[in-house]
Length: 319
Image (cartoon, rainbow, N blue to C red; front, side, top):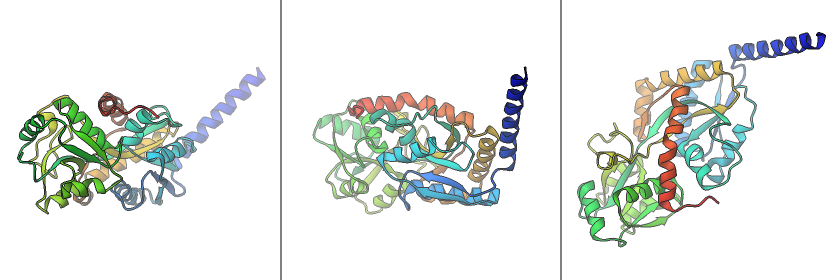
C-alpha cells in the first residue's frame, strides 16, 4: 500500500512539474532546426517566423541550420531531442512526406513529431522554354503527346519536390518525357538556356527568369490558384487527381506539452494575418498560411497517397 501511495505521489509530482513547465515556458532561448543552408527559401521563411515568435514570447527563437541527407539529419536530431519546447523542427514537405519513401531514415514522421502549424505554402510553377510553341497548358500537353520521348524536363535532383511534381504530372497526363536531374539552380538555368523544355520550380525564381522572355509560365501545382500568380490555372483544373502542394512549418518532438504546442500555433496564426509578413512571404513566392495542430496532422495524412503515387510515377525505389 505504501509503495502504491509513493508511486501516486511521484506521478502526481511529475504531472505537476510538466504543467508548471508548460505554463512558464519559455524561460530560455528556443532553437529552430532548419534542414537547409542559410539564405535559401526555406531558411528565409524560418527566420521570418522566428523573428515574430521572439517578439511574441520575449525569448530568442534561434535558427540553427543542420544540413544533410535531404533533411533527414535535422529531422532525426529533433526527434531525439528533449520534448520540452526548446527544440523545434522547421519541417518541410520532403522530410515529412517524401524522404521516408525514398530512403531509410531513423525517424517516423507520424510518431516522432507533434505538428504545430504550417507557416506557408510554396507555389511551384510549371514552366516551359520559349521554343515550345504552346501558350497554354492544354496546348503544351498536346505538343508533348505529338512528340513522345523527344522532350525533357529538369529538376533540382532525383526525389526533389520538383521532380516528383513533374513525374506525377506526366503520369496523370499520359506524357512521355525524359527526366534530367541537376543539383540546385542549374535546373532552372538550363531551362532558360533551352537545354531542357520543362521545369517545375519555385514561383519566385521562375517569375524572375520569365522576365528574360526565354521561358513561359503555364500553370501552378497547388490545389488552388496562387495569389502571387492569380491568372495562371492550376494543373488540377485539367486533372483533378493532381495535387502537389508543398509547405513549411513547425513541428516539435512528439511528447512536447500540448499547452506549449498550442501557444506557438496561436502566434504562428497571428503572424500569417500580419500584412507585413504576408508581403515578405509573397515576395519569395510563398502564401502565408497557418493551421491548427490537428489540421496539420490531418494534412500530413491526407497528402501521403499523392506523394506515394508521385514516387511510383518517378520509378524511385527506397535506398
